[in-house]
Image (tube, rainbow, N blue to C red):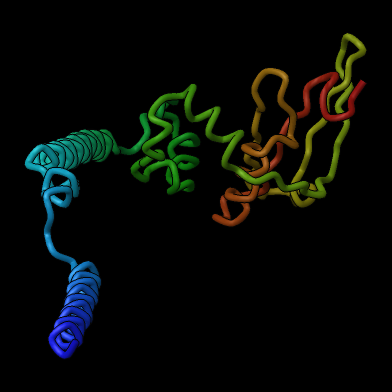
Amino acid sequence: ALESDADQDDSSSGEIVGAEDDEAVEVSGDRLDDVDTPSSGDSPTSRGDSPTSQPQTSEDGSGLWRLLLTASASAATTAVGMALLFTRWIREAAPPELRYAPSEENVKLVMAVPLLLRSYIPNVLTRNGHLASLFGYIKLPSWRHRCDRELVPLSDGGTVSVEWFPSRPADGVPVILMLPGINNDAAFPYVQHVMRLVLAEGLGTPAAVNWRGLGGLP
């Protein structure tokens, strides 16, 4: 009876020891699971760190360099073109060519208008007459001068007017008469701009013609 009890105690203690070992193994296994250890499933390939991702990065870098080179070449070409255009524009700047009969009165008139003897440097966007006309319509602001209107009846029954700015001149004051283009009247921006310029330069009294049927005329 004593031996059987001892054997039973040994077996129970062995079970207890075995159970404690199993729990220790399980606990240690849980702790090991918490540690981020590389496994067969966490290989560099499965994490996306495979060598195949490196060529993708290099392709992106080469594409960026190509884009930068293209933009630099485009900017350089534009700069060279603008420099050549500006150089030609400056070379063409010269006083306007005046055509008039070389009479004493005409010479005095030309000399009295120093603006005609200055170098004419047009805007770089208005190098010809067509662009200059279009640019005048777009850029110049519109002023509505209060002009002194003088009606001029014609022999065929029609009527034109002369728009004096700011008023009719006194005797002996030079008159700068402007003739607007086809279907234009004295209220057009480019005409108003020239009238203001003439007055500001002290060249005389500006005036503009309103053709028949324009500017409120019958």
